[in-house]
Length: 428
Image: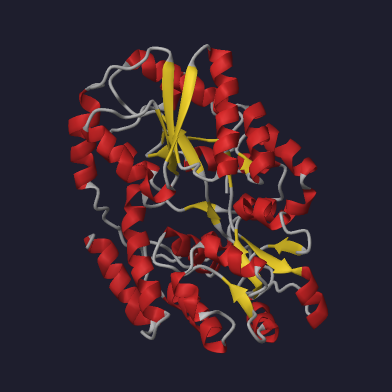
């Protein structure tokens, strides 16, 4: 953990996974050759369409009405400040990369693309992004961990406005009625979840679906247990997946867990079908919409008392595609700088309940939302999914998604993860 990360005004500790790191590691190969050819051969050949000199386009995944509105308002403010018009083009998160590649092939890339940070390295590796520092963006007030979050091979390609991670949400009324405390260890979580499973209510809800949502939710269990994405069939990763299987065997998790997204998990929690859930701050606005729901938030339980709960650092980053039009890229850089400014970050974070990436903005945010202290503490020791593997993360993610489906429907964790390791290293 970088010392500068403590400038978030959080109490940071070295991740437990680092202290228990395994000596053996395997290099994971990333299947992004096709991406490289497509981007390098098309996007970098120059801008192929006529554009309005004073109109700039930002492609993001803000399809939710609230997020779309917040972004539109921020773009209007920055557009006014810079004397340009900024148009927002929102597509579902799962389609951002695909659409960006299609636009690259037709030489019609937008001026700015907001990628999920886990996807950004794939586009950057292909030479499709501009170094933001060359466009005048400074990282002086951004903690090192978040600079790394938006970087690939040491180059700063993505500016984060906010970051997030996962935490344990719980129904206060349900826990109080059952006379149980908020669990802090795996043993306590399993015991508490069993006690709270009754009727149509499961003790815990989480996402183990065949998509990035499930992988995102598995990382706190893998990393907090000392597991590593470069060694998917290692004993610590097997043990973490076995823990999930144990919750399912107890009946504390619904069998539908293998199909649920994080949005589905939140729906189950709000409907009273789950007493606790693993989820992130993007759900807070929806949770607060139900005044009868009294919820709390705590760190995700750890294998053993006193260890750090190491979750994934999540969020999106604003990038400037390499279109070959240096004048437009320079202005796009100014737009990114404005959207990621201290003032705009704080406004966005207070709307979305995320943690600002800017250290000064984050300190103000913490004072304004003290009820999210547990989330802020989780961010302090969170890790980027692509920190070790860069663009190779995509192969690991796909392999893990398949492993969840197999292990949670009957196959042994060891067998499922051995296959996952083979898939990740072969890229198949």
